[in-house]
Amino acid sequence: MDWLCAPSQQAVVGLVVPLIGVLQHTRIDTTRQSSIITNISRRGVGKSALTVQFVQGIFVEKYDPTIEDSYRKQVEVDNQQCMLEILDTAGTEQFTAMRDLYMKNGQGFVLVYSITAQSTFNDLQDLREQILRIKDTDDVPMVLVGNKCDLEDERVVGKDQGLNLAKQFNNCSFMETSAKAKIGVTHLFYDLVRQIACRMPENQPKRNKRKKCIIL
Image (cartoon, rainbow, N blue to C red; front, side, top):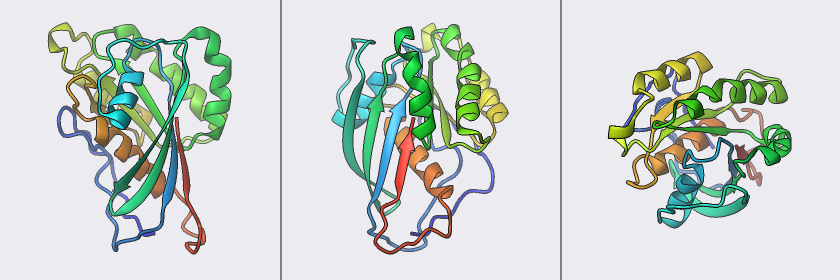
């Protein structure tokens, strides 16, 4: 499978959401890629609603923050068939002990905050540092997501804040989404799949191999 990676970060917000450029195949490849996606963020930011909207096409108003759930969805990204396995982690403090395991096994990460809650934005720097420490690398596929962009009247975190934080993170996409209004949900997951594909070792055998992406 041949992927073309964008040479630099491009930040786009709102309705146009792929942010690190568009990765394209130089040819059609029907090899099946498996991606395991996990959301880890604070409760109340809408990460579970984003997952359910992407997988099932419905908006969940209320969700039990103590529940960890997993989903599977087959998609086609740039002519490449992908089976996504999405782990939606519990957002409560008593489950933070499991985070190290999720981070260790993950290949990509979705960091979600609510544009209506400054504290959820402030938490992300520490969360990213924890990911990099456990992964022991600074080059980790990652998307910074400002969710609930439909609640513009309640906004307390500006788009410029999200853009600037993503730039500080280095090689990190940024986008604003709304699970309720279906803004940017599909692009969020597709963007991370593309990032992971870009970082796969070029010398991996292409024959009879299923590439596995784990997204946290």
